[in-house]
Image (cartoon, rainbow, N blue to C red; front, side, top):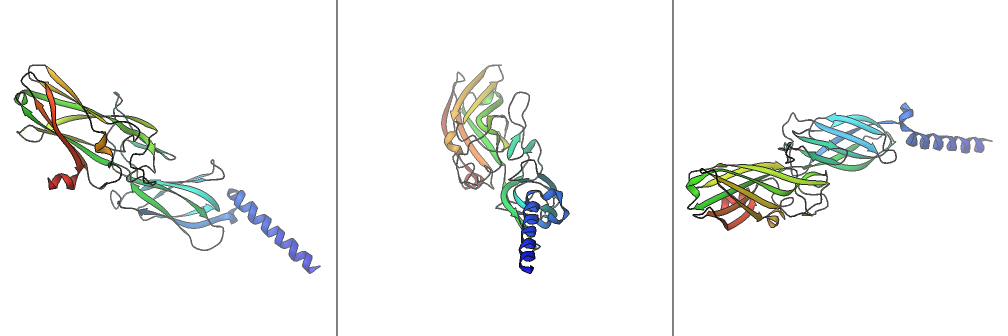
Length: 292
């Protein structure tokens, strides 16, 4: 008789445990205390006072979602046992996070707004059902990188330059959060969900014909070409246009020296009839530029 009771009791306990994991939100006994801890991988929070938004979505039930706001060192929470996808990010200007999707806002013209610097990342982890203390490490990677374009003008038309504007095509407007700097899968030219352009208004750096402008980007579209289109407007109301394929410059944008700004340096000669020619161009990180 005692053997039957023991067997029956074991079955009941196993049934309750299984029900606890499956229907975890329906029983207070199923809640587990644990800590979610951001791990800053080759990056750092924007400040010691930064917050990290965290969502934890059940792998078994996509409607089972927890939302937390953490400090940079983590947060103690209570969750039901089960397997979850954890997504964390720092709130950032002109950037929205929807599940795994990072999106930068756009101007009315459709060009990208300035993305505020931030870090974020994902992990999948199991919340255990036992009483042992548990920490969920949440890897955080840099999600933006600065890009500067410097144009060095020479030639007869230099003194007549009034304004310089341009765009670069094939940049990321929306992408997966794991395709940051660097992408989690090591891909050098990651794909995007939506691409677009970023606009530049170049300002004089000096009186020698150097112009520059820069923007913070969430990435490039690895499946597209990147063209730098430049328009130079002159004091007599005429203008010149030129397009330069700078796709190769972005092969390392997501993976090499990502903590530094990247520079593209274009040398343009303006002839007597305002004809523009590329005499040279190069690209690299800020440390590369400093070494030149």
